[in-house]
Amino acid sequence: MRRNNYEMVKYLINIGAKIISRGIDVNLQNGKAFITACRYVSLESIKILVNAGSDINVDDGAPLVAARAYSKLDVVEFLVENGADLNCKDEVLEYLLDNGADVNLLNVKALINSCKRQHNTSVVKILLDNGADPNLQKIQALFEACIIECNLEVVKLLVDGVADVHYENDRALVDLCKTSRQYDIIRFLIQSGADVNAQNGQSLINAPNRMKNFRKIELLVESSAKPNLQNIQTFINA
Image (cartoon, rainbow, N blue to C red; front, side, top):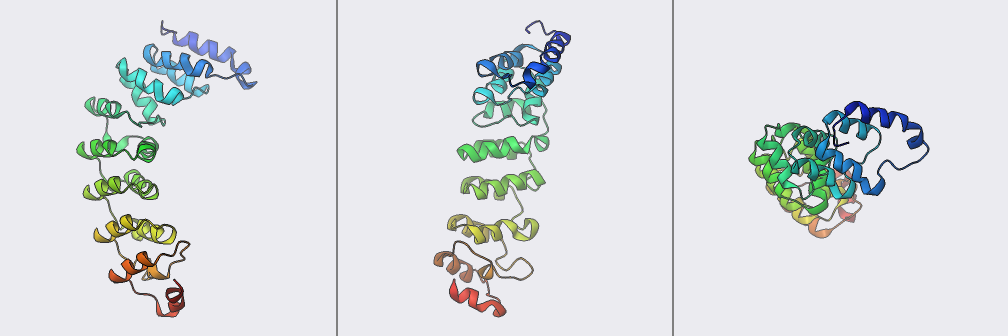
């Protein structure tokens, strides 16, 4: 494999296709062959291995670390674009950016996983410091994911980077009020301008609420949320 023989890699995988289809694990020895490949072989060979079922995130992301260590920029880019987990690998992100990667084209799944798993603020800081547009759809997805994961620090970073708290008619705040007791994040979104009477004038007090909480209701009222008169009983029973 270290000879970088693309045709040989392709040939070996092709003749092994029937064996793989019968259940043989292509990631034997915890993906050692694929990790080694990320150090030495061409991008085309890496693509063949991935198409054959090699796990991009095997051994806690070792393929990405291996490619970075051997300065295989094209392999690093390919792995990230195809969902390699950036968790705890800030140096990989910095390496990509130092070599001209477009910060707004990075794989959103990798970014979300990074922030969800360790409440990692450093990845977001690197992105924003390098010109990430916080209002791109993928950054909004990251914003919502961090809200769901109760990651207030990342939410603050994104809002400070001018993430749109009104995205899709204040959906983030609406969803939080319906399903969560995350008072601190709700308060922060309201302080950042989220509309407590969004959703076509339907007050969040009246929203179907699986987690009714007096402190949250009090916050909404203090923030000028108004219960709809036709649904006043919902407010009374909250």
